[in-house]
Image 1 (spheres, rainbow, N blue to C red):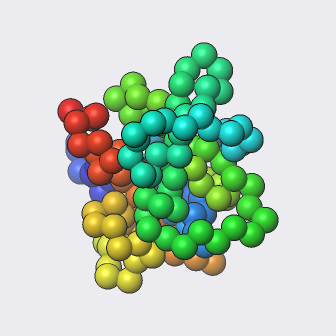
Image 2 (image 1 turned 120 degrees about the horizontal axis):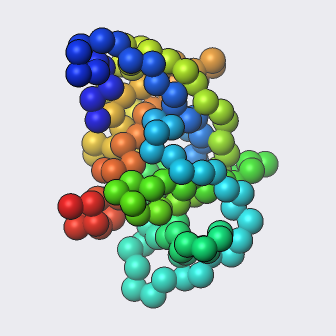
Length: 158
């Protein structure tokens, strides 16, 4: 993803969805989000699936596999009083949900406010954090959901 400039080299306005996983703040470009659902269903297990896949749910007329973001980002599972949510994406017309602890809200920022990634990140998973922004009282690590999906299944987005 190239957020720094549009095709004419201009700075763009972005909307970043902030959410919490494992006690840390993360964000994704709202353009990749289809919907946000409460995590109030018991997912159906998928036999022989990747360890990061919790199972699948059918919120309406489509089936959605669920990626456990705590496992995927290799974080400690620290559940407090979070309102667990599913962030559903539709990348390349694939509906995939990301299980997060809590959704915080949306930040409107300019593309030049995204800072380069340094070595002090919450996750040791390579290349999934593509930048950072300063939230009101925390650092928000911007995730590349496509890299997470291809980490689980390298052939799915080709």
